[in-house]
Length: 65
Image (tube, rainbow, N blue to C red):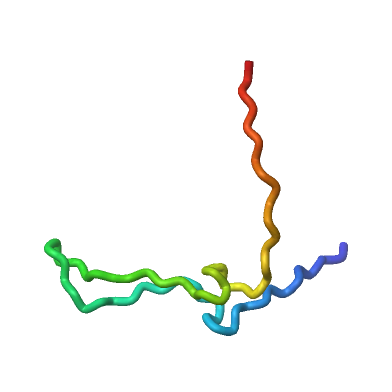
């Protein structure tokens, strides 16, 4: 049976597919852990790909009787 090849994912050229990083601030907290900042890639909005997503339909919730 033939195998379908999925379309290649277009990786963001700005972050190379690593959209979120933790940056060490160099500060130690009281419990001994390091203070970090989590930063996401601005061009891909933290998705890691260049594919734009379309707006999804609104979710309608119904009450069950």
